[in-house]
Length: 144
Image 1 (cartoon, rainbow, N blue to C red):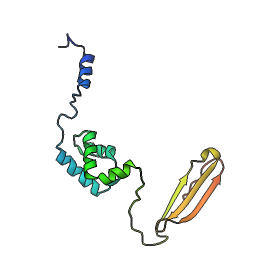
Image 2: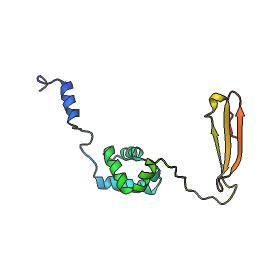
Image 3: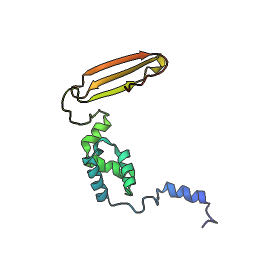
Image 4: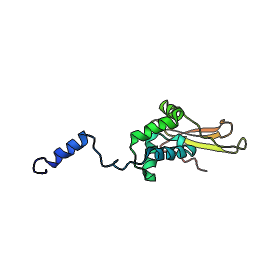
């Protein structure tokens, strides 16, 4: 066979006909769906199909990305629509009251103009505790 066809020709036909050894021993889709459902109960509802496909591979499940995408569409259609519209979904956590949790953050998108913005929000009321815009050459750390 190798005398008649070159290895490159065989590989070209191999890929053109979509013959793949990678998914020869695929995991049963019911088992993959059960794994995805279990992940959805944890923090999986935040993840898209690419990350869920990676989680499946890490878990040792042999499945293609398209199957994971379709299964996620069946299992979590609302989440797929939210991710498709790129709408922010806030994390759910319990806060005992005002000033219990503060969120600190920095932003250096105005770095080219020499402006750095640091801020703090109250986790309960989402009110701004403080904002600081600093100029100069370098961003300062907000860790106190």
